[in-house]
Length: 249
Ligand code: PGA
Image 1 (cartoon, rainbow, N blue to C red):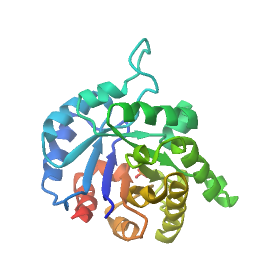
Image 2: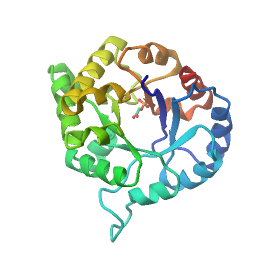
Image 3: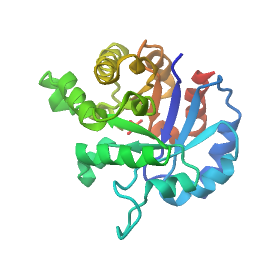
Image 4: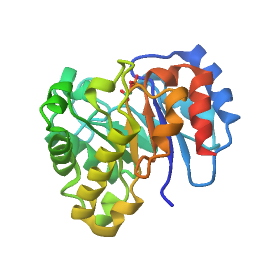
């Protein structure tokens, strides 16, 4: 059985009051053994969320990480710092980082290596733009992103990666890939992972992201190769996010 994961990406949102509200709400959600609820607050809140979730079943993620180790890199946050404050996951290659902050596939690959050095599981985001989809390039674009991000990893290291398929045109737009379209891309990603690492691909969780809400999550997550979701906007609504997380029971 593959691990099912619901990860909430708060982006540049949230504050101490929101943390005080959402953590108790999520603590009440029943989750089957092996599955995981992950929350990714902004950097300043990682430590307080880490302390608030204590040893319970919630897991902590960062939204990004530096591609270098500690040193003179003003404004950057290293993988070892994330491990130190209790992160067990970290998002890398989010389309907003790629489009707004110049994140390249090469940086994504380096960040994955830094995270693996400290035992943090990268959540690697890939996805096509609307223009690429309309030009019939979806599968090839996504395949190239996957190969450039994780193609250098051994099967053992690849087993410690989570993929997230997030069509750029679906992020924050209210438009969601149909469950069938999502399944098609997820199956293709799994095939690419199998070509890199063989049977290990069957154990790798591939999340769907892009306007997931409690009203559409169940159908998306029931697709054969969709192992949960990476949730932006709906992760800021404690009751909607709790309902999505309850699909992990
Ligand atoms: P959204 O964001 O759920 O608001 O579309 C998803 C994401 O960017 O991870």
